[in-house]
Length: 181
Image (tube, rainbow, N blue to C red):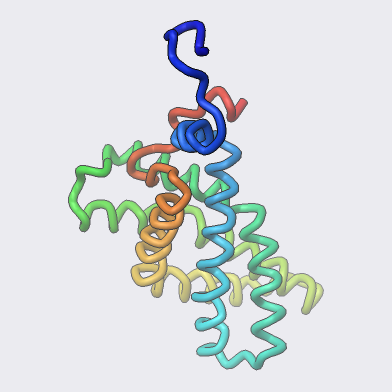
């Protein structure tokens, strides 16, 4: 018996369902990481192919991207939520507004991350940073970001819902501040 409420103690599946509604920050971050990785694998492979990479190049690119998304996937989910909060955009906001906020989050987080990847890649391959390539890569990603940013946001929110986590507009992390410390 639950002594506080005089209710029968929850066990098994019922307990797991109740527990899953209150997602921990670690669970949210893990879901955001896996969401970023899976989106990056599919969309990135298509971009790599359209850029002319062969199978080995696509494999190498996606391996690197997976490693990077493993690191930045959780922080990006948190960043999206903060961007929604700062812009006073919530689940009740219009679709266009939410799309623009996802675009803002993408361009203010993912584009700078991508520029660091290009800088590191050029440093390793050319032994110096080719700032022209860094600029061109950032520009190219920013140009296609209206396609990638919002679709990534929709995918990540859908992925969260599959696992019982609130969307970025609903603010899953805000209920878990104590688990972030």
